[in-house]
Length: 209
Image 1 (cartoon, rainbow, N blue to C red):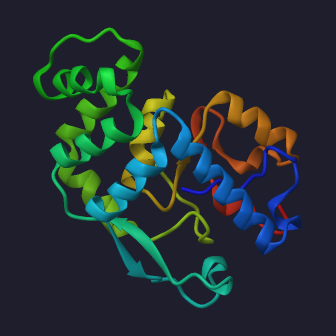
Image 2: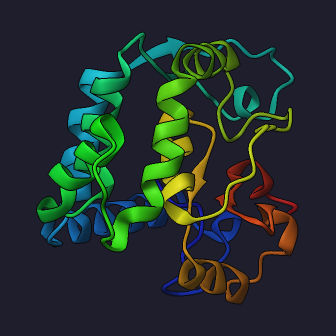
């Protein structure tokens, strides 16, 4: 998921050229590759295994379509176990992945830093069929006109990461530090989906935002 705010130079995306945006995204991906977590590598693997690219289903007047959207990524009909494997690869440090997986699937106690991921993942496991169906039926991306509504109160970043993985092209998680950078870049609070939940709505970042 490419960020829509240049938090380094504090320049609004709508004021950047296409080449500037390309270079910023390239630099961000390179930094991600060189970091310990190597998120960009795991994300590319997830795109091949867990998602499918569908033709844009939106009407011609939708904002995403008017700006040349060709399609959206949608989660495939995968099992929860596969989703969980991808989750821990994307979001959990390698030394805690087995513990988080065991806590979710087997109920083993886990008190590590990533423990806040466990209750939400346990809930998702119990409600996998309906949650997966909702994600596959959504058909929207973060740049669509219609507001995205999530009927679930997100309490922490690990939960936000879980939902962003399920609704890959519609939601992006952020932490407190990122939120402060976004505000310093000049975006109003309506950029955020919900002050209580760690999501950003990229559909709010448009030329007039």
